[in-house]
Length: 347
Image (cartoon, rainbow, N blue to C red; front, side, top):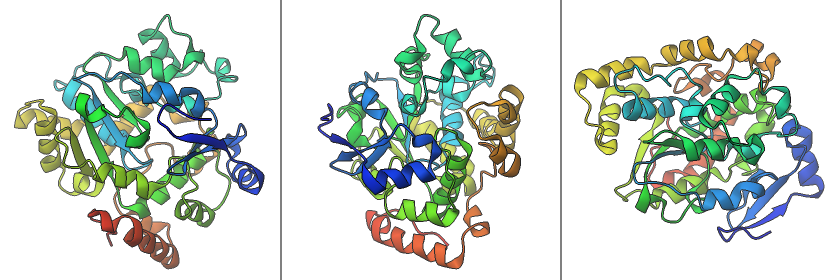
């Protein structure tokens, strides 16, 4: 199947498909691999691929772009607050972040056949109905939310540049977030176990091999980063390194303030820095959308290891990876990421 982006999508078959379905219970509907690039996605991606490639961005849009588990939720809240809620009193601030800052391609991860079973109880669905009262969820909730999001729109994606509109950077601004690959692997592993859309059942070691082999959704990670680095000099693209945001928070927030043109005062920035700390965000999330009530999460994982807000640290890989696993990722990083001029691996 040829897509509007020029890529050809082919279904995974044989042992490759069988292994994915065995280790990821959420991929029962199958997967597709795109050429060129070897991008891996759920089969449902092909239903939305052309709409995503042709999505109409606007001049005041901000798109947050990352490979999965690079600190998306944190930076999403920070950027949305800088642009939409500098006084910390916006009436939509309590809504699920994916309602007010939609994850544009997330429709490919939703089982729309079982959606009616959770429609009345899920806080996200309530927000969708409020903002898009006349929309049919089966036409793509996240695409619809992206279209009707309040200006200035803050949107997020894990898609690479090559699968998004070619004129994206000529139209809108993009914040790209990168993170130490060792932390990415550990966080992505938890995320894939947590969400029923992935329902990963294997070990951390097996998951690491999937990462190294570019066989996780949105992979290849190296190519994802390469496409961003190639555009790094564009005035509408701003790089954020997760570790810098953790260690020198105010300096990075000031850079975002300059890039976004929000022109907030130092006092406002400091209040926003406090408002978007891990502990504050976790408290708000659990107040309005308790993970123990979320039908899209594996509750056994929530009980044992936590939900979306787990640690929010840099360097937590040291508690999970063996010395050999650490060395494997570092060697991969030195081959694929270090030559791009990015500050990884970090010890």
